[in-house]
Length: 565
Image 1: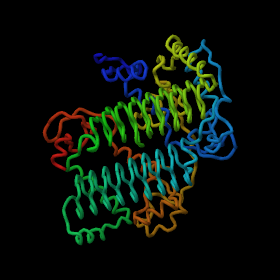
Image 2 (image 1 turned 90 degrees about the vertical axis):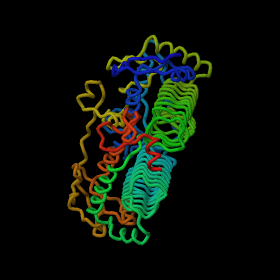
Image 3 (image 1 turned 135 degrees about the horizontal axis):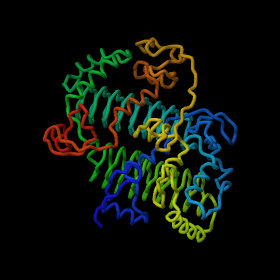
Image 4 (image 1 turned 60 degrees about the horizontal axis):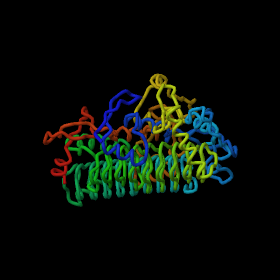
């Protein structure tokens, strides 16, 4: 079958469906999409509220809780303990299918009836880590998001296997790291980016297997280097005695010097590793035969996949967030741990199988159009059927979805084969990851019939302004009692575990609130978009993660590997 050009019914831009795409759609028995890849991603991300947390009451036990859903929203919300309890399974809210109404309209009704989990976490696998979201297997973690298998960590997101660290982003199997991004198997690596197998490395970028290096870039298997200059062991440690990161002014100084130095050296066009085979994308690792990928690990034979942090994923398209031995995922977000053959769904938890149009289901199999359902099989709209009844009714519904489709508020047509409309999300657009990757103003959201939410901010009385904090952490012994006013106007505190880690690493108290620090890390991370550019060395055309207006020197993979490694 030849490639086919289609026009996205949302943004009205043309996009191409390749022959291998058609083969995938045929294999999993779905029609080709009518939205372009970017609009499909934006739609999935509009269901993901990771960072916006609020105080409210559990609608089951009545206790005060922290929740993704604000108390002013109409949805029922159960605390983690109540949502995961065995005293209910979701069939209490079951509905009979009405063939006279669009099926997705009935799913939306079920969304508004059923109770949602307060936090998107595997409650039974969290120890002293209540203030986290999109997490599993944590111990003593605080305000961590999108994190698995971590211990004693603070203000970090998209990490897997992290210990005794704070303010980290995109890190795997590392320990004692601070204000860093893109690390793998690193120890005591501080204020650094895109490093692997490094020990006691500071203010460095794109380094591999380095020990005791400062302000370096593009080094491999080096020790005792300062801004890429080789020194003796004695000279290096004499320099380090004068670094004094316990002084905030020194941190700012070295960050500025390091960033200026990094601009003088080449960057690779895409951040991948040598364990990839036939992969196109950015921040893609240990993957094979995968295209249009972003921030993935161990993905094979897939396309349009993003934020896959846990190995492994196979034979999947348009899959966002999680992983963990999954396969045949299509138009799915936040699903993993053994899930298989999931379509047009959000929030499918361990060992889910053959589910379509499901919204927050756990350990369910062969379900269609179910919401907040647990450990059930052969259900439609949360109602139990026999296997034969289920298969017959499912076929009838699919036919009806094509002849009587749901029409969104924007006038978009949702036949069988498309993910939920954005208006089905229980979150406002500006609460979600969609607004982080595809920012929109309130006016633009209203124009596109998307929700916008601005809660009344909590009022705190600051006791000290960020600019008045002591420069030296050794003069900060009373910091746990302070309410600090950030430059952005919000108040924050230093928590005990964070302070103990800062003292251990001898690093000054941060001046920005956790949200501002996270936004800086995100802004320093390349986006999921790829650009056509020319290599700064050989001039050949290449796919680049760097925007054309960026200041960095960018080499194609061949030139970068030849010069650096």
